[in-house]
Image 1 (spheres, each protein chain N blue to C red):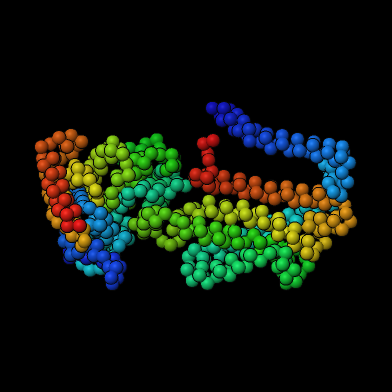
Image 2: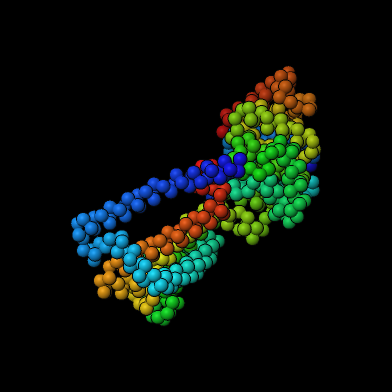
Length: 264
Length: 255
């Protein structure tokens, strides 16, 4: 029984994983062959082998810069998400807060991050704190809005059930509204986690002496395109990795929800 | 024993004001099962919600064993079953049934033992760890009934609890309710659209009419107990259904 379950589970994972893997391998082969056959200049499109060479020859430095960006993104994500969750909860519970603040929050959300990043860097200095702040700024709104929506979307009859049971507001929050909001919370977290990598790299573009954004800028200035591609691909992988972590947490916490199918 | 005297409830203000309940007087003897029946807008659900302290009356008085609906609710002595089961999707059936006890602060072992007893009472053995969406509508409503009984209420209020179920499931749950009523001796107030359901289950049928919501007639139901689905073949059954229907039609004619 357990063997059977394990088998079907690994078969399922295999069924899901092989099409994108095959496509990726195919793409890399075609890319490599095209670069060689058509003699494409490396600064236009470096071949996968050239990018890989850029990774291996600079692996220690790239690992250092990756670590910096990862730290900024994760810290900014955590701070931004925590503030977003708090504000979203405030909005859900107070019509005054919602009416008063929400229009400004939405307006602030439309500011392009490249425009506000220099200001934040002036405020928070040239170190990592300013990169964390830009990341937090960017990975703040999605959770604030989804938290509000999630907490407001409770079932009115379930609320009546809690009323009949003479539940305290605290109990209503922890046992009804927050668990019910979790599917929304994870929508917000998935957006935040994607934005967090963007936020960190954009902030490094503006001013930095380390991090993947710094690597991209310096590689661009010296036309070291394989190195630039390497940094770009690493940042993409970082974003995918973060997303998968959040998706795994979602599976763990929101198994009950229809959007997470447990039967297939 | 429930005593309702001169109870009125007005929704809205000014031009838009609706008299949902108008000077209702009603006595429900302790341990009896009373049905409230009538066309939509007759105030039967409103009256039930006042009994459960989900609505405040505009004027008049309600006493349940000498206490206000609020006092009874705050002591967790009110059981309420809604048309939808309204179970928490993220909790299994056992923990859904134990929820009111958990909210009252009863320890885990005690509340789960109680929930287990109720699972047996409503016939959900084997589904303790199932989640609501894995269950049929009838089973979910059984769980909702068990949850309402978890705090050992003084009064059980049911608001069209079987309205969304198919006929066969409905018949079975009717019999479950009759059995639970007989076993527990609870005072039960049932809001229903179905005169046949009302006749089958209740000791007393309260027929209501809309605009404004009033009681048009109270019919005592002497159909012998214990009730079973065979009670429907008793000569008195069809007579009561006819009587109820003619009363209901008067209500529709007025409305």
